[in-house]
Image (cartoon, rainbow, N blue to C red; front, side, top):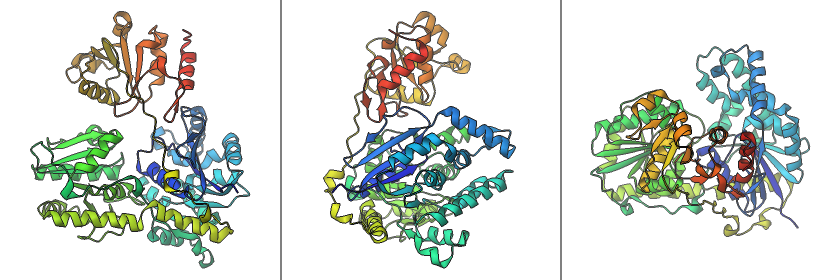
Length: 562
């Protein structure tokens, strides 16, 4: 008999699985696939992926494309309803909750995908009404990563629109909790908060199930402090902080900077999109012993996790569990965190982690670094043991499978496959293709600078950047001159040009429209700068992308037919 199938519906793009939310989705559903086949439906705004992507023998990701024009129309309707003038005051999550359940195309596609599913999970409260409308005859569960009402209330603070937004969210999340057959929470604290906040009657309280959050421990071998290689850069210790671009993460990054200012024998690596706030918005003076790296390749991040002496998570607010804590545990790097940074995790101070405060973290980190290696090893090993015993996705997934069996009478455990059978496919990653002669880099921004670093490390140097920013044209960037697009078009368009930007498609269309041949256009499409392909070579499906369709669409927009 064929194995049973479950489907999860998520409101954002999970590729390329490089941040907390998407890593959690990948880890949980990979683990569940030991006993059931899994569909992960994601609602995306860019039509760049294959229609479906199998990431293992038993897990497929199905991106459903919603045109940007549709979302823009919803935003305009939302602004009119809420009497909002400024786009900055629009919460796109509110737009999703209110309008995407009215998109019949999405509803019908989800209905067809879930026809053979025994269970559908709303991966966030935002997807509740979409799932409810599409899956009227299916059991629906809700996987809650936090109490969204509390999170948004803290986020909105004293904004003039907060009362209207919060009232809608309160009613929406309560409706989701009351009507879903099961609510999976990341801690008992969250479960209790849901019950209290939404006045859940005693007869319904057993639907809340604390499954925690987890990590895929099977794929990582730890390196403990005693085993770690020593940096040859003059610093005695190296700390690591990984975070995305949120206000609370920025505040924690500032503490990392202050630590470095206090101790010149410590070097701190700040990794992730938080750098954009740290360097650009706040314009904080960064000392020499802080390296703000931004978003890095998986290889670079893994190298830091395997070599740094300690990790920090000095958060003062937030919701849910920080998945990066599990990542630190998995790699054997000792963690110093505030109680908020360690929220939802069974950390015992001095046993499997160091709990500190923002008033005394400098002293606590210094004391930890000055302690003997046996103590540091015990902290890291106990944290890894905690991860394996309590927070491994496999153990958490088995609890879910047993609950499904108990509630609906299925026999799923007997359909287990081997761990090797659920291993994720290796992402196809072509080596970068480099220009053979003189070349230019289009866009002197974040992507362009990352591409420059990558190319220079490989022994390549561009003739110039090509940019429209007059200030950059006058001053240059990192010793590289910057020329205008018109100058490139008139004098250099027979030379190769690497388009290095997040939204690179329209830039490529513009170059083709200006008469630049496709075989002269290269694309640096990853924020690390380490993935360079040539436009004319884009064929088939590489990794998660349907490159051939993308190339044809670009040619059509530019009227290019060579």
